[in-house]
Length: 176
Ligand SMILES: O=P(O)(O)OC[C@H]1O[C@H](OP(=O)(O)OP(=O)(O)O)[C@H](O)[C@@H]1O
Ligand SMILES: Nc1nc2[nH]cnc2c(=O)[nH]1
Ligand SMILES: [Mg+2]
Image 1 (tube, rainbow, N blue to C red):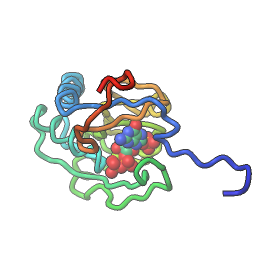
Image 2: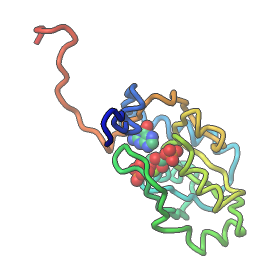
Image 3: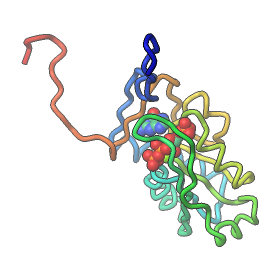
């Protein structure tokens, strides 16, 4: 860092507000998402954007009775800093065939869209697929066909698989 230059903030630091989500809440939100998707389908297969999309994909696929599940493996955030997107594994030939080469009848699932970079890359791979996320921030929202809850761009969502219960001091000093 040069003298006088502001330190680079991570996405989480830029997003000042915390939105912690419990397993219960996440399950309920995934089921609510499925209610909406049930009106759009049927789908030949679910494509989960790993890793965050794996949990909602399992719940949605269970509710919709879809048993063909594929992954597209993308790495971009190193904890909370987003770097270049890397496709570590593409969509399988079998899933591509089910979607007629363009993704028609396929359901892409991720936990959230933030900047929309991840979603945009997968949409380019499957332009005719339906893209669903549980949560959406305003920048990524136009990319998503169906989502449940919108949170502001300056919110950081904490998922249950990334968090643990811990002691929280009382609001008032010395109250402990
Ligand atoms: O809209 P964007 O700004 O691209 O961000 C959204 C993506 O970021 C998170 O994944 P991450 O890259 O952290 O990987 P993970 O799913 O393996 O945790 C999240 O699960 C989305 O896939
Ligand atoms: N856990 C988590 N990962 C993200 N990746 C991009 N935005 C977010 C967010 O708000 N929460
Ligand atoms: Mg992800």
